[in-house]
Length: 100
Image (cartoon, rainbow, N blue to C red; front, side):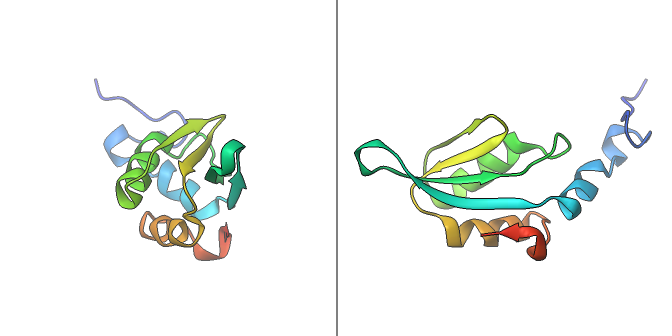
């Protein structure tokens, strides 16, 4: 028996919930300074439908930096505010809903 998505009722391989969520998400990108002058880029505003683990892998690989997921938001080491928007657009998020 195939796994069925509880939201859309389609099989998991045909599920479109993540694509719909990406088109409706209001994403916020900001830079924060931590102790010892460490700069962190914080990307927040994701719903449960978006695969944040996969997205953080893509961002970390693209920027060659460390990062983590805390409380449903992505924290990347360094100031990547300008470049995060480009990667999010490639991943299917709408430009008008990305606040950078």
